[in-house]
Every structure is written in C-alpha cells, then in structure tokens.
Length: 278
Image 1 (cartoon, helix red, strand yellow):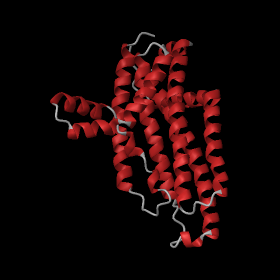
Image 2 (cartoon, one colour):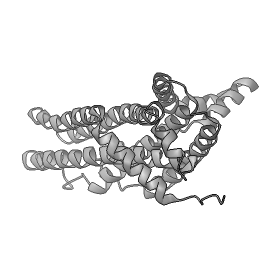
Image 3 (cartoon, rainbow, N blue to C red):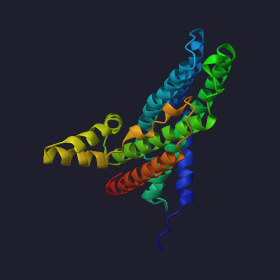
C-alpha cells in the first residue's frame, strides 16, 4: 500500500477544528473577557492627571494583562485541547485515517497559535483605542506636556502586540512538546508554567554564564540559556508612547529567534508523539 504524502491541507483543517473547539471553551471566553475588561477599564485612570507618563503606565498595564492572561490561556488551552483528543479517542480515530502524526501536531499547534493571535489582536486593538483617546484628551488639556504633538504611534503598538503573540507562540510549542510525552493534563499545565518562569528568568542564566567563575556553573547556565528562549527580548512596550521609532531590525531578529525555537520544539514534539501509544 502506497503511503500518502504529507499534506499541509490536512494540518490546516485540524488547525481550523482546533480553533473552533477553543472558541467554544468557557476558559477562552472568560480569560478574553477578563483581559478586555481590564484593558478597557484602564480609561478610568483619566481621573488622575499624570500627564504624558500616564500613557506609558496604561501601555504597561495593557501589555501586562496581555502577557499574563495570554500565557494562562496558551498553556491551559494547549493542554486541554491536546488531552481532549486523547481522552475522547478522537485522536485514535483521526490517525486511523491517512493522517500523519506530524500533521496532527502541526494542526494542533496552528490552531493554538491562531487562538493566541486572536487574543493578542483583540487586546492590541482595544489598547490602541484607549491610548489614542486618552492621549487626545491629555493633549487638549495639557498641551505643554506634548511639545512635539502626539507621541503615540500605532506602529509601535502593532509591533509590541506582534512580539507578545510570538512569545505565546513559542510557549505553545514548548507546552505542546510536554503534552506529547506527559500522561496527565495537570502535569502539562504545571510544566508549561514552569517553562514560562524559566524563559522569563533566562537572562539571569546568561548573566551567570558571563560572570561565573566555576566551569560547572558556566556550563549549566550556558545549557539553560541555549535550551530556553529569553522572553525579555519580546518586550517592546517601552517604545510605546516614547516617541522612539520602532526598531524593525530587532523585530525581525526576534521573529527569526522565535521561529527557531518553534521549529525545534515542534520537531521534538513530532518525534515524541510518534513514540507515544494512543
């Protein structure tokens, strides 16, 4: 019997079904509404006349909500959507057809990445509206605080939101990798958040590698710095409202950086899932 070739179309269909399943989950709706409410509620800070620094505060609040709730959504949704296929035996039924396991993993990842993209796009759009309206109010009320006019650029917001999505996409790849060899959903969620913490503190390992005197300590720090991405590189919120041009070279560098980790984690996930008994 001739083996069917790999098909991106089948992976895309699995991804579309994953996105549809995620949209029906109460967790997705709850976290999305909570994050949207927090970002939209930031406009109530208009009662406090902070001047121009208020925009920076609101941007930090908005992107902080995006990072926190986005990470919770990504880890929980990845674990739940993967194990629901395993526990309901739908994965076994699907893989009994001419569907590669690599297509299944790729489809699941594309669906989860799409969920994160929708989440980040909605919050970035809402945050842009809140900041633009608030800056207009401050500009009319305190023109002396804005000698050069508007400092908020939509390109900055779009780039910052894009990098937040890239970070969630990398986190989803690592969580999916854990799910392929994990036996329980709880273990996957806990490990996913553990990976999140390591990635946010990865820069400390790089500092230890640079300043370490012990060969063993330098080796351990170097391995951690290589295996786990540095999520601090994905933070572009400091450019929002600062009147500084978007460092597109940095955006391109981080995009390639994230793609490398996604491809590596995805390849390991495919290999692990091929060895797994369903």
